[in-house]
Length: 504
Image 1 (cartoon, rainbow, N blue to C red):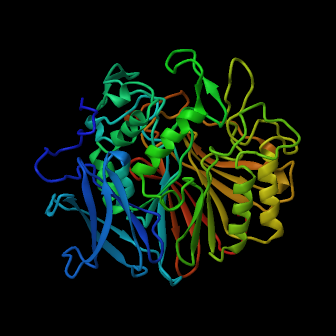
Image 2 (spheres, rainbow, N blue to C red; image 1 turned 120 degrees about the vertical axis):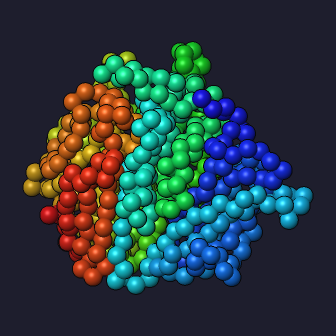
Image 3 (cartoon, one colour; image 1 turned 30 degrees about the horizontal axis):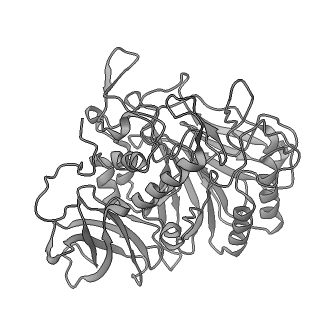
């Protein structure tokens, strides 16, 4: 076990100079910009230096924010005017606010900026769901070992599809496995109970950075981060009130918890919309050169209440009207060959949210294979828009359901027919319980071409069933190849898609 207070950090001792034992991260990298993140163990001035090589000859210096208790000693610095399509080496120094000459040991990282020219290949990985169902950092199996496998792919970036933490999931020191062995977790005080306070949420994000594989990965691969329910509480929606006294206080309002989580989320990840907007908006589009735009959705903050989801009119849906109209505008404006829609919840997989025996649903689908109802109405509107505006190259990537699969949607199989065929790929978890495959809803005609999932619920990371996806876009042909991989990098399924077309 490790102490959970502000001073807790991996593998360093406090000294007279600021230290950055939680490593560094880069995020939302474009053709000429990126964000760099760090956390200090005390008040410090953040300084970033960039260079073309690891020797840091003739570095360019960026003066970042003063890190203090108001942001849990975290901070982000925006880098701009970078060379496109190049490897950028950076190092972060933390300076004593009272004596700028006193700096801690520099912490280094690297990332590639997106290309301006089409001919350079693009590769990225995606997954989600970290430290869920009580399965935390188990050093006997290599901790969060999946991050080492993803790093070996040398991707341009990592798209995290949400559930970066499980704020509602305490982590005990041990858990029993089916074969009689014991799963042993690193533990902290903040992870011993559900998160309620701002410091609880901060401690959840900080917990993951105790893992050395994740810190290595963060220093090598920039992130595009989105969130989902477990950043706050399982299956939450705006306006929800929970709690009978255990484990949450009776009458707990999720509208009180969500802003605390969002603040901690914004402190622990470098995200462009959060750093640039007072409302902390998470949905955004990341332009990654002429081959790729990534549309990062927020299917949590603006949704309506979970319900039987069978209403015949639904103006709010799962995105909210403002986000839906934004997505339409941005898709119509995009000139990228491929338009990846990062949906933190799947479209055609039925995700129940049973509450006191009521048949409520958590995602888009509700199991009725007929005409669109409930939240499906909003997705039908979007799919119709994509078809009639002749927007090509849309591919949907998601996580959430703790198994991996590939679904092909086709109007010839669907009750709703006014759309063009498309693919949705599912990956995850990163380090959480794995679960059997969800049922499909026939409204949009999904065909599950591939699936790998356990037959029992909550299979531990020690037993496998941890997954990530990899996307390669060829700079010459424009072909996109999607591979679904296991935690060790083993390829389970491959699908190649042609540019400028829809469907198979």
